[in-house]
Image 1 (tube, rainbow, N blue to C red):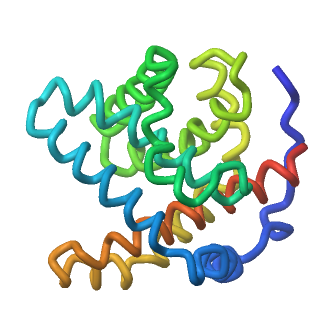
Image 2 (image 1 turned 90 degrees about the vertical axis):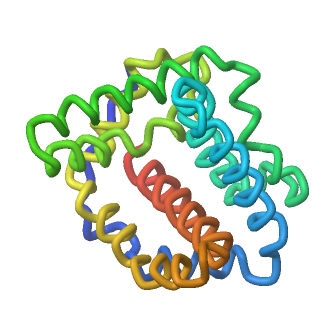
Length: 203
C-alpha cells in the first residue's frame, strides 16, 4: 500500500475557505446538483421503507453520491450527468456494497461502546468512497485502512466542517426539507474539496 505522508493540519485551507470554494463551484449551476439530491433522496427513501433494501441500496448509493460530487468538483462529470452519477456504483455493486456495509458495521460496533467512539470511527472512514473511486484495484479492507491513515489528525477538522453547516441544515428542516435540496449539495461539494486538499498534501 502506498505510504501516506503526515502533514500539519494547519497547512490545510480553513473550513471557511472550503465552504467558500464549494459555494463558488456551485454558483450559477445549482439545477443539476439539486436534481441529483432529489433523485437520490427519493430512491433512498423508497429503499429504506423495506429494511433489507435500505442496507442493500441506500448504503452503496450514499457512497455513490459522494463520488458523484468528487467527479463534479474535478470536472470529470458533465453537469447533466451528475443526476445519475450516484447510480454508477451498481456497475460494480459487490465492491461498493461490501465497503459501505463494512463501514456501517464497524461504526455500529464502536457505537455500542458509547456514541462518541462511533462518531470518531465514522470520521475515520469518511474518505473511503473517494479512495475506492481513485483506486479501483484496491480491496475494500485496504480502502478503510487508507481512510484511517489519511484522517489521522483531521477527524476534528472534518467534524467541524460538517458542524459549520448546522444553521443551514436547521433552515432546511424548517422548510419541510425543501431547503435540504440545496444544503446537501453544498455539504457534499465541501467534503469533496476537503478530500482533494487532503490528498494533494499527503501525496
